[in-house]
Image: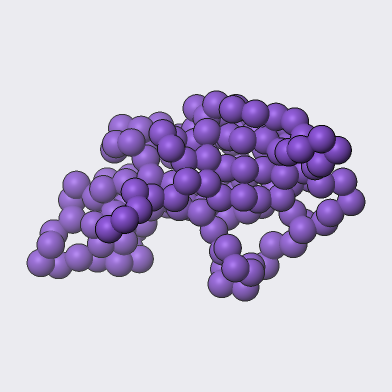
Length: 151
C-alpha cells in the first residue's frame, strides 16, 4: 500500500470552542492551530487527535450544515469518523470519558477483529472508537454483537 492512513477529516461547526474542548477532554487531543484559515477566511481549528491524524474544523458564520444530522447512511459523503484507540486500556478510558460526557451509551460492540463504541460530539457528528478485539476467535468472528468484556 502507498498510504499510511487518514491525515485529517474536515468538518464544519457552529461552536468551535465547545467542540475542541470535547476532543481535549475525552481524547486528550491537542490544538495545533486556531484562527483564520487565511487572512479574512473562516476560523479553522486543527485538532490533533492522534499521531499524524487530525480534525480540521471550520467555524463559518451563518453556515448551518453542523445542524443537519440524519440517520446513519443518510448523512452525506462522510457518514462518521472512526478513531483507533492506542490500546485496550486507552479504549476503556475513552469509553468512560464518553459516558461521563453524555456522548455515548455503554455499549461496546464486536466487529470481528475489532471492538467498537459509538459517540456523538457536541455538533452531533457520529464518531466511533475502535481497538483490536483480544477475545476474537478467528474461526468464529462475531459481528454486531455486544462485547462481554465491557458490560
